[in-house]
Image (tube, rainbow over all chains, first blue to last red; front, side, top):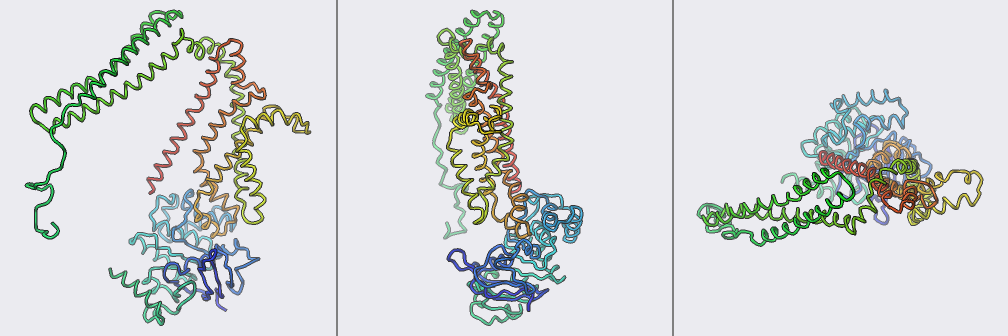
Length: 247
Length: 376
């Protein structure tokens, strides 16, 4: 059995289906890139895994334990599944340190000093130690997103979900965020990333899933998906991305 | 032009046939300055007449004559100040004519524009002075009846300690009510936002409460609670003091408004903040407590303080159930002396506590805006 098993899930907002009988699996230490046109359900898929959205049909298992449907303690589940959002979503009324230590103190019941020690270690590791006392609005977009990643890591998650984390960034700030992700991949962090950075997805992932109309249209190792995609719509999508790059 | 990019026939370039159409030689603003002159004359005459009447009135009421003369002299000097921009305007007007005579278009335009703006400045000053004169005439009308009825200084000074002491009752009522309302409003707001099917009865009760108590006039609530609850003889409740009852009535009324303010503040926080908090494993209550409410409260401080200022004024309503607050006290004195100046004292006291708070709210909002701009 795989580490994360997604079995035949569906999700619709009112009558609009967003995810449609989607199945996929993720092994431990895998980095899975989820690519696809906008509206194909990438973000919704990640939010379902995290329990931020309830699914209408199917089930998701982690280590064989069902994490969707009735009787699941979503608060406990979310401790172990970190998510980083496109818009950072830092808490503007707290310092960087406050943002990072809030959940460890309130949810994991760590002492303030223990939580701060851990936060400072992580911040130092990603070159953000001197920003600990700053408020988020004093940081650049790239720094904010790196803080958001540290905030998720401070909960010591088993899986990290990254939802288009570079889409809101100015181009010159993208690499500082991606280098953190590369770093985490090298350490063996299990990650699912919804992304438009095709070059990065190709370099960092162990598997790529192309989503289309709410289900997995084609999946495989990055060399195959990006090198010689088998199916028509994958080819069209990748061609249009490449064309956009050329301009 | 696009067809021949090598052409140097661009608008504005030397030798171009096209010129900006900015009109010919300007004429001096005769009509405006004449109107200004006439208005200044009228208003100045009215001012001098009013100052003369004021001087007579003060002398009659026995104010030292040197003081009256000094005041009158000062007022006359002040009233003449409106003539200053007028003289400036006429100097510019002469410059316009000189520049026109020497055919200097640029100088003429500059001088005309200055003459015009001076003319409008005069108009503004004249208008303000006219209002001041009207007000002074109102006070002095009918042998200074207005001034004596509303601003009879000796009585105001004499009764001030008594009124100030009664004003402490108002202060006590609104201070306690503000503290209670801060807590009660938040409780109601959170009830209005209670989640899920389980929260539905709570939501309905809270929304009904807010609807009803926002609709009932505060004075009615004070009357009903202040007179009604003691009549019912309900044990425990009936033994509270009258002030406790009016505080309760005001808390119920204002609490409904404050709950709406809290709710608006909480709803103004983008849902992505809640998503981020929940995704870290915080519970619903923890998310409200540490993420949503602290941010919401920051947003609502200005409307909350405005609501408090309104509440402070509403404390004057407690006189309907016989609490001797400053308004009630002043009415008693007013009846005894057949003069309303003491009520003016109460008005001044309310103004004195309200203006600093209003300015404080404004400054706080300005600071918030500046911070937003700096971060944007």
